[in-house]
Length: 493
Image (tube, rainbow, N blue to C red; front, side, top):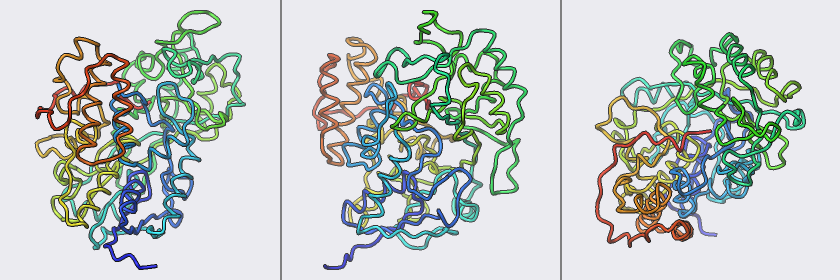
């Protein structure tokens, strides 16, 4: 067998972005040295040494093409994305969302990466930015202290930092199903994908008072200088204590909203509802939806067991708080994800300031593709801003942006979202978004190639929704970015 003489790429981090970048490169015949410090050194949030371990929710959020994250997933499917292959293979019921069995998902990816002949896994803690080029830094929110300090020197300014909170997971057999009902909000999916814990008015406000006065966890971090009074959680992963601090009604209009749900026993909408989402394929584990928390572990057990049906709940994972670090990407990165300061050095994943599993994976996909192009002597690609991937990377690399904060994908980030002619007027918001999605997938295929399967799927949905057929991408005129960044349909659950 002839040795592969192509330039290897060094990738630091075996999370979602690092694995996706690895897959894109080895699929193009380019060898990869994948550096992952686990199990030599573990983080405070990870429990295994497997690649792409999901440490927070098991949900990849909305599945429909009327949802921006659904579009981003479709773009990734059309580009042979490993993360989407794994997600589709390991999916569990989740109504209108795509959720996975986290253990099967991680095992799927770990097997593909470790068994590929072009991948060399290096289990070590990387203390400084590797000198080798090309290189992708995809160390995620839990970048080790030593590397974070080196990155801080490299970017020329202090890293921004905030904290993420993790939701608890409960053993299904320990739930009292006599007090809980099955139903998806608005009967999406198979209509009974979620378990719902109904609360009346008195139960709700009793719960609010317990959360208010429960003892809080300050958070763990390896950097001693980080103070708990500087915690700045991302809005989409806001701990329930932070929401309660904003007002007694906040949870009832957030993760505990009862809209779209009817308790079959009373045939009425509850005053508030705590939802449980299936966390593994067997349905033995259930996660508390939107219940990220920094309550101390004994307090979680005490307070959450006051909820109807959870009196004897067995928690297989309690909520916790962990550090999330990201660079000031608009000052540091081109929209190709290559650094402005050092050619051949790329960043991908949450460290770039994208939020969410899918968004992190998508930046890994782009970084992998562009490293492959760079090795082949081709120019790096900048995704069209009228696609979900393009809208996302343009957001994090916009030099004019001030006060940079992490962001999930939303239709508001997709250029020209408000300018697709006529479809909103003819078919409403869904038809409008389907046409935007059809255009985005056509542009993705035109720029990157790909299977085209996702484009055909979205066009079929567009026909069903009586949306206007998409134009050939060569005939789509240039459009400007929408200023609407307030689309909330894609908030993490």
